[in-house]
Length: 112
Image: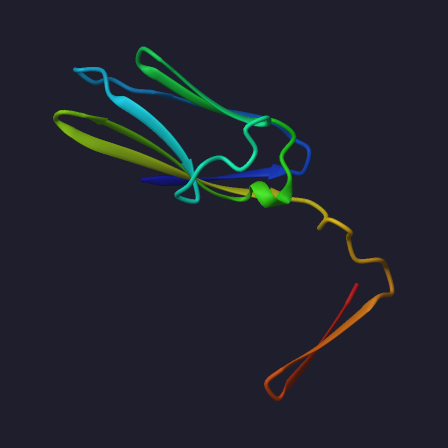
């Protein structure tokens, strides 16, 4: 299963997921199939029948797939949240700046 979450740059969020399992499932969180990229701003916590992931001051590079996996001796379940962070690119494009690039024989012009 999956869902989508959209944040503006600088916003914070907490994702809480209740669950039931016997025996108590082992819980793991991943970001794009790996570790969280910024352990200072991203934390996961699990207590009995509840897991959560907090993200402080989102930046565009935080966009991606956050997956929680629960597993015990009887099986495994997972849920993916696709996060999109909206905001300026670092170093942003200034007004009236033109960017030209050539892709094969196709010329594309972008302007703001």
